[in-house]
Amino acid sequence: MDKDTAIEVKNLTKVYRLYDKPMDRLKDSLGLMRKKKYKEHLALNNVTLSVKKGETVGIIGTNGSGKSTILKIITGVLSPTEGEVNVDGHISALLELGAGFNMEYNGIDNIYLNGMMIGFSEEEITKRLDAILEFADIGDYVYQPVKTYSSGMFVRLAFAVAINIDPEILIVDEALSVGDVFFQAKCYHKFEEFKKQGKTILFVSHDLSSISKYCDRAVLLNQGVLLGEGTPKKMIDIYKQVLVGQYPLPKGEGENLLDDEEIRKAAADASRDADSKIRNGKKSEKAGSSKTSGNNGDQSKTSADGSGSAGGAATANPDLLEYGDGAATITEYYVTDEKGTRTNSIIKGSEFTVHMRVKFLKDVAAPIFAFTFKNIMGIEITGTNSMVEKAFLDPVKAGDEKDITFTQKMTLQGGEYLLSFGVTGFEQNDFTVYHRLYDALNVTVVSDKNTVGYYDMNTKCTVTDVK
Image 1 (cartoon, rainbow, N blue to C red):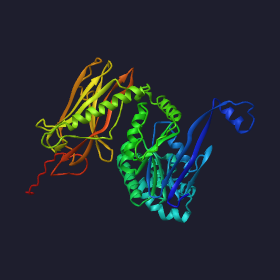
Image 2: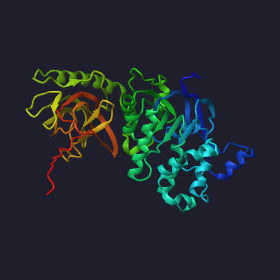
Image 3: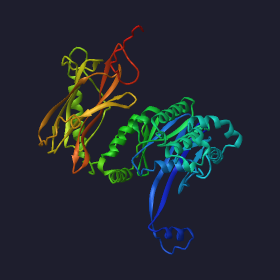
Image 4: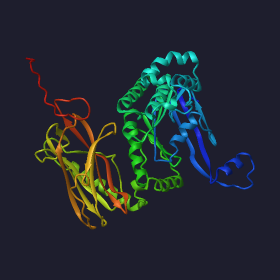
């Protein structure tokens, strides 16, 4: 393994045996099973990846994609069926918080017990005891048996033990949002401290904003298959395609998408089996969709670049990500300022309008029109749609065209943003994407007063003498 590599996973495969009866499991473990009475579930399929020292890598994917399984194998909780894992550095894992706690022991005893299980000596734990107790902040309850703790107190103590042992490698599985809002803020602050100190972090989360904010790189798993790795923004956009079952995926710089068509097809089919309420359950028509999307992209760019008005036309992204099942196409999209001029520069505090024109190629029962603003890191800042705004819930016919406008006041801080568009709906209660354009336009917010965060609260401040 390279000296700059903290974690190396090679050709990792994990197969679970699923038994109908507990007795069948016992018989099989004792070698008493004469014939096979189990089903095999492939949780990980020949996964290879590496994490450099000091790198923060996020793993994303749908439920059942093997995210937690790969973390457990890396930390030694599970053994792989095939493949190997090499780790260079001391690991602290935030997986199943409190695993290994003895419910009869008090908090102090469990701190020492858990610390020694991780690999620290009694002296090393004693040096960290004050920091652990301060972080957990459960008061004198730390001297009471853990079985008397509330669920909130239990996870606070477990998190405090895991996060305060100063590891070289931190592995996190959906564990940052524990306890009340104040404790969650403390957890994220500690996480940021680790990142600033150059620790190696492997991070699994369904919170895509956290993946965008903290991670240097993202890895996309789907049904045990490594679909790709690259920038968080790229992988999140592709993950959203996986969620709605729309392949093929585009190949871009920095991505390592699989070329094996059978694996990709199997992954796409499997992705439609889980979380059906947020997927459309249909395979996109590859040839028709690709042809239509290409034409739409050309039309959109021409429309966006066609304005010669003062202030400049909205800048279309030549590398935008677009997909859909072909029932509708976004043929034009742009932004106008308060004077109705097409532009990509909006003055903070002024009114502006987002425009999109949509042509329908099939009958649609109730289309939903949407737009979203992201920052340049790929974090979704704000957005809305016609269903939320209760603006349009009517059916449309093939051949219909609609002009959609969203008018609002610009309260985002000054800076650069990316604007995305979408036409979606529900087909027999399944969420369906008809056409999406991710990061289609660049919008610049011009401001002479930036406050803290993403938004300006338009605060009025007064200072008066005390009488």
